[in-house]
Image 1 (tube, rainbow, N blue to C red):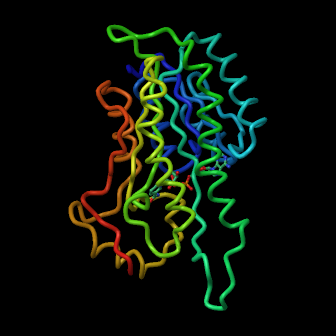
Image 2 (tube, rainbow, N blue to C red; image 1 turned 45 degrees about the vertical axis):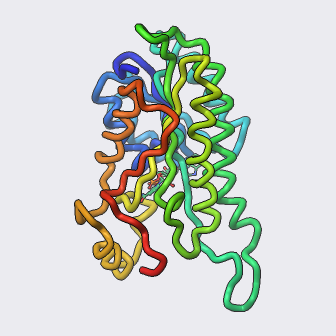
Length: 263
Ligand SMILES: NC(=O)c1ccc[n+]([C@@H]2O[C@H](COP(=O)([O-])OP(=O)(O)OC[C@H]3O[C@@H](n4cnc5c(N)ncnc54)[C@H](O)[C@@H]3O)[C@@H](O)[C@H]2O)c1
């Protein structure tokens, strides 16, 4: 899929890995629709990149109505620009660490599990489900009839889940498992599906991590001996968008790091 003059829908695009992807695809001529709950950051991104090819839609991906309202706005924008959807990148995600049973023998509150699963899994599925009717009617590109690509965000937790990551690892493992199914289900429309599994990347999600954990992580990095940056992630998204043979796979983006059980 080419980037220029196509529209890219990016949930979680107001921060971190999503925002880096917004900037990268925009710099290559894409039209960008940011879907996020963070209005301040979303509007800041539009102000910085310019409103001509970037729109912010306040959207909570746990709400079907909120997603549909954003997609209605995007559909109207596409009518103006004639820039059909190139990719959907559902990057909004959260963590809420906690073991299923605590030291006082109390089970974790179900609300803590629901919070993670509703955003990282149910919300992603709902966003994909509701975006598909817009993607399947996009004009196919030559020579293979491609209509678009879905690039989801899994995590190293899908492979090497660490203590306290039950809900997060379950949600990201589900994204990984979903990738081939989507590729198979959507092949008839010329729509591909990929997922990316980053390890430790600098973002607001990881900014609160203690120095002790950061130092421990430095010991487990293979090469390069550093956290991933937004540009590393955005570059991988771009590769997934542009390389038509990438389909149905979850790509680890971790510099060979394998997360240990104990930090
Ligand atoms: N940073 C890492 O080390 C890392 C590693 C592996 C996977 N990931 C995944 O990458 C993705 C991006 O994470 P990040 O590190 O950039 O985090 P981030 O916190 O910087 O950005 C996440 C964005 O999602 C938005 N968001 C949260 N809940 C939402 C909702 N209900 N509806 C709409 N938007 C919502 C937030 O407002 C925020 O702008 C997530 O799916 C995360 O699980 C991150």
